[in-house]
Amino acid sequence: TDIPARGPTITGRRDIYHVGDLLLLNCSSPYSFPPTTLSWHINGHLASRETVVVYPGETDSEGCEASWSGLQMRLHRDHFQEGVLILRCTASILHVYRLSTEVMITDSNYIESSPRESPSTGVMGGTQLAKFFWRKIE
Image 1: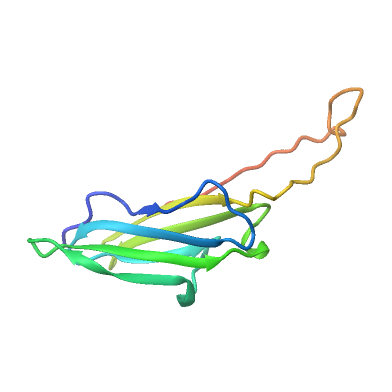
Image 2 (image 1 turned 180 degrees about the vertical axis):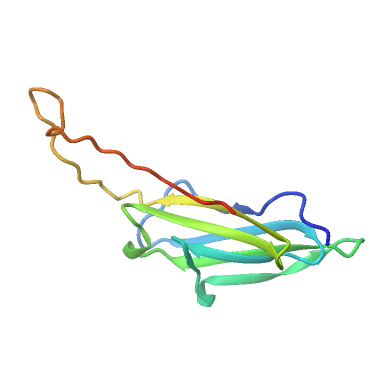
């Protein structure tokens, strides 16, 4: 087994997305033997076959193969959780190798509702708001 020199890379991400936009991303994994299998996850769920495009790999002179995969889908409101969509590409080789990379896409039209600020104290009704993002990258 000859594992990739680095983890997978996601490319094609734009700075701004809106509900209704067409999302077109690519994931690539460097040369390995055997070649990596690439899989996409959308908000932690395996992407459907209709959204994934598998491109032919490229083989080098030593017989190692680079892998490519695409994710193509129209963005809907239910893709975004509190205005955020998390996409993960995982490269794996049997039970020997598994590495992931993620991108976070935000809906540029999302407006977060929050408690009103008290005019006299600047305190939000005595409530503190905190958001935690936890991601496990295998």
